Length: 229
Image (cartoon, rainbow, N blue to C red):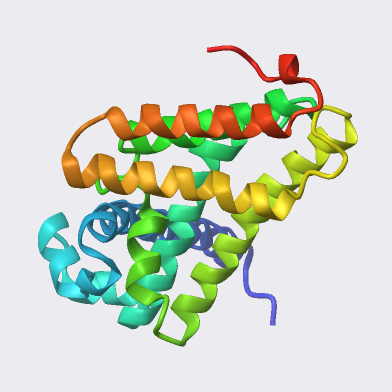
């Protein structure tokens, strides 16, 4: 059945309005989800993922519990979505600024400085989001720990890739061990983050920078390739 021309015209108009209403609901739903996740990463970086709840987020943002629940469905899904949101923020703050750098010690150093700036600036109110929540879940098997472990391995691989690039470029000694350097550099970062928060002072960042510079100079085939400053 095709209906009359009038029916078809009216149906087309009604269909357009219906599509507009659907699009509007989808947009509002996405905006609500983004607002919830922005608040969730703030809370989790200070208090941990365990502090997240549908009720608390609804109250903080002036939303209905049902509206927040509809976007996530369970506390675990909320936690996983929060980690994914934090990954995107972390990438934009730490990795993206050096993504196009030429391989070499300068790129390694820029990444280190990018991480220090991220923690120092409190991109997340509680310092490094992943330092805070990994300690919470490192002994709790399940999807959240799995995602955090994947995130940590990806970050370590990012650092390792830059170190390998510097070695391939002849700026690190041929016998330099990238895995050992990754371990040391990320340890400097995490210790600086932890102590800066605990003692409420900036000095740990400066110590981390000096430690990292000394380490890379010792491992460099050409120390002049490491930027000054």
